[in-house]
Length: 135
Image (cartoon, rainbow, N blue to C red; front, top):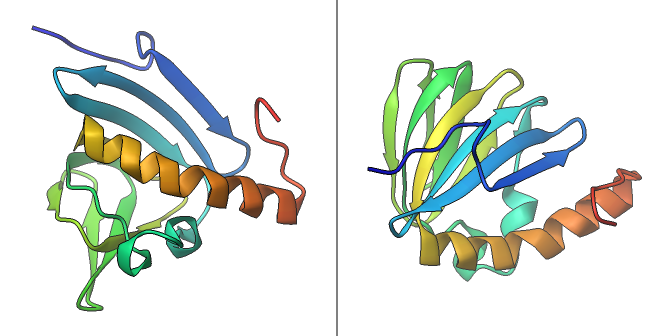
C-alpha cells in the first residue's frame, strides 16, 4: 500500500501568497495536498483548455476552510471542511483563503491540466510581480 504526506511528497511547490502544494503520483493517481492563502477564481489559469475549463476529474476531501467550483452549466458549488467531493471534467476551481484539501486526480489528466495551467500561472505571476521558484 502506498501513502503520501507533506513530509514525504515528491513535489513541493510554493506560489508565494497564493498556494502551498505537495504532490506525488501513486498507482496512476496524482495526490495533491494544497493550502490556499487568498480568495481567487482561477479561471485565467485554464485559458487554452477546452472551453477554458479544467478537463480533469478529481476526488477529494476538504480538511479546512472552503473550496468551490463553477460547473460547466454555470452553477457554483461550495464544499466546506469535512466534505468529500467528486468533480467531473468541465469546471473552474474557486479557492478561498484558509482552504486546505487533499485531491486525487488520474495522473494523465493531471499532466494535461498542468500543461495548460503552468504558462498561465507564469503569465499571472509576471504581470503581478510575483517571483516564482525556479524563475
